[in-house]
Length: 355
Image (cartoon, rainbow, N blue to C red; front, side, top):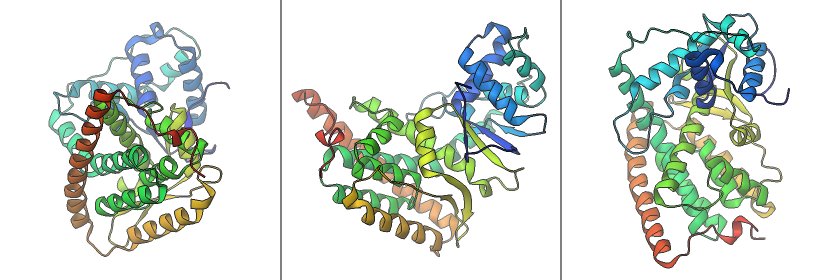
């Protein structure tokens, strides 16, 4: 099969619960709304692979944040909650009660659009969901991604840039996180490591102020969803194995580097992702040992913190907002200077990391 979705954790075998990335949910929404009129051979092949993986077994399918990604935005605006409900309802309908219709579409047979009743959805519940995800998960992630990119752009000394990231990680309680792993690739990576980090962020070329912040926000959304998808204690007793499905090849490469192992519980009740990291060939040799110690100490600190989980949440929300405001101001100033002098561009180290 030429075109396939990527499944996390990796591997074949049965699926008990499937969590869908935005690109998967969008395709299912198009199939449900248009039926046979929606023609995309790449999507058809990918959907066929997903159906083969699901088989005939009963599976808990969750669109979740995958349906909401287009609506949870960096800047406040009037959110189109109805789109979230529609995408979610269509995706779940096709993978649950209308899976036979989806099979026929994947086989190239004629299918009619799927009719789903959306009247029972409650907007207030959706608003609450968006607010919870933004405040508790996206803002801390966004603060750390911004710091990682700022250190990459502004500090030519990797060790110093990593210390700045570590300080923000400590204050936002993101120690040992995937955002830290992304920061390591960006700041201390080899050519391949930095290229991978920039491709995940969709920032292969430096862009203007708003585009930079949007790219960082979208990166945080992806990392947050992949973390929630495999940290099953957040959801309680979901049927296992829980699998995250995406068509994002850069995110897939990064996640395969991380090798997610699921989620665990810290001593204070905070849910932690359990990941195995392989930085071989992706970080500079002279920094490898320092990075290993940094990740080990960060994970240890996060898992043994005695602070109650609700207190941790309040602190990380407040500190995240503080760092977001500081870093957005830094990027705004940089953008104004670069536009004035016409000097926009990534550091030379992006192409040739320092020895």
